[in-house]
Amino acid sequence: MKSVKIDELDRLVIAALLAHPRATHAAIGQAVRSSEATVSRRLARLRRFGAVRVVGALDSQISHRARSVFVRLRCAPGAADELALPLAQWQETGSVKVLTGSVDCVAEVAYTSNEHLYALMMHRLPQFDGVMATFSNQVIRRFSTPHGWNPGLLPDTVVAELRADRRDRWSEHPEPDEAAPMSELDEQILTAVIEDGRMSWQDLAARCGVTPSTARRRTEALMAAGVLRMRTVVEPEVLGLTVNAFVWLTINPTKIGLAGEILARHRNVVMIAATTGDRNLCGEIAVASDSALYEFLSETVGHLPGLIHADVAVALRTVKRAGMIAPELRTAVAPSLP
Image (cartoon, rainbow, N blue to C red; front, side, top):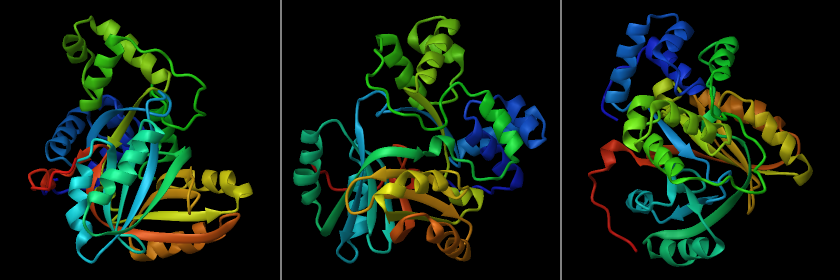
């Protein structure tokens, strides 16, 4: 992200986008008590400098196209930085972070089959130099995701009003037994909206060779089915949340659901999911300071029902988020791995 000064109005505009990524400038203006023209200028500037972007996301679990696994790496001294970028270049990674704590790097990886995961974990990952140990936690239920993150910068009533106008699913729903069939036009729409989540109906229609009404109808059908979800992507520090961390928890199995729902409602929790492996509840948090992190751990995590063990690692660098490598790192040269 290029250097850009962020003020309170900018943060409120981003908060409105988090509540409704495709909200009109007029709706955002009403939410932040500013004019439509001002919102338009602010948002254009924020997007131009890379402070915020809006993307569409194919829900791989709802569409039955892929599963997710968190891969944690313990590395030799100095190796985490060197392997994070080539790991981010995998098309399977949605996010990659360099951490400080019990592990040195974490990545969210999408896989299409057990054979695919086997190849990634047993063949491709071991080719990285400096990996001392790996831990994997497969996602089996999502309690909250960044699609519905509310950092609490706007009043709850305003957030509810913005969310009420969303056509996509911002909260988590049970996975259907079968995936809905998708047409060639659906695939074209997905490709376009994944690149630009605020693309106009006219531009989307021109790209897909259909009328604007058809483009809107098919897009909103994909949203309603949960296949296409909208996401506002922003680094927490832009919102004044300068400490980004990951938590890996061991919860009594009878209390996982209750603990997950409690965390999902917390303003500082960006995402939380039930997983397999050595930890059964994994998530990302964002807080304003070290003291706020202490309070979150002692007052929220410490009082979770069924808590057995908690592990925390603070993020030092975001290498990849929401499928995109950080702009300042894209020109870096990294070794090519098969």
